[in-house]
Image (cartoon, rainbow, N blue to C red):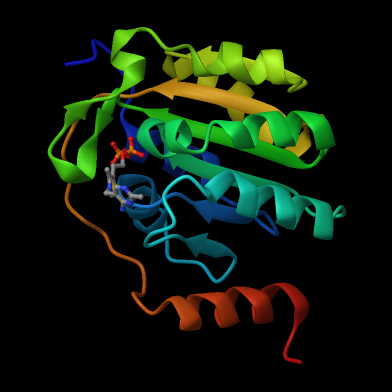
Length: 193
Ligand SMILES: Cc1ncc(C[n+]2csc(CCOP(=O)(O)OP(=O)(O)O)c2C)c(N)n1
């Protein structure tokens, strides 16, 4: 196990409580289940595939909606697959974008195989080197309020690599139909068109 203390469901619940107009992109697998466990929401776009794309979808939203705050919640495996997206975010530097990586050091969905972060890859250091305004590793419950204030009020781009326990939790699934999810999100954001 990772030696981490933080419970991913509690962290995500604390970050999304009273979320208001926050736009959320959830990476596939457990991060999407965590966001749904915090309450299925039309302004959450949970991915059922497209591994490695969560940050790029978040960047597109942040650039298209500069007046809104955008949060990407994803896993370390998903983030590792799209590592180049951190360089692109660093080049664009959207002030309204935050990325939270729930780092269990495992590919949870496919059997808890170790990811690179179990061998020391420091994703926050990568984000910092790419030009993120804030990039931190979070290990303690007392630090979760910093993550929350960063998401809602901080100057982005912000990156938080949150070390969480490698628990296999119950699946809390969002709607499965990707077209429905896209239209639901779009309508909640832009109104019926
Ligand atoms: C391109 C691609 N490769 C592999 C998979 C299979 N897959 C789905 S979820 C997942 C692991 C996700 O791990 P992580 O992002 O760390 O999330 P965790 O569930 O561990 O929190 C994998 C390997 C996939 N869906 N797409």
